[in-house]
Length: 88
Image (cartoon, rainbow, N blue to C red; front, side, top):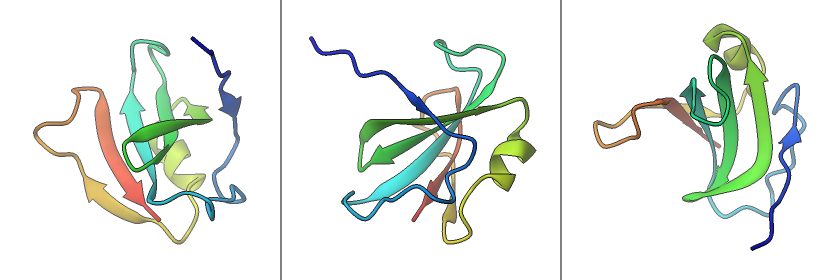
């Protein structure tokens, strides 16, 4: 199995998503692999990419989102650590 290391970003503003089919940013509160932090992961449809952002607060993550994304509230079927999703 190939392990791909996370690419830690300060912001998603300049991330090129043009090659992704349906890019989205999923925000987590204290996921198992990064407890105690808010984590944003870039996905392509339902597959995570290696692009990640880690912040202390949800507000800090919101400040680092690009202006062209649209908020999607969490679904009742989402994993409990998922806070919200943002679609490009």
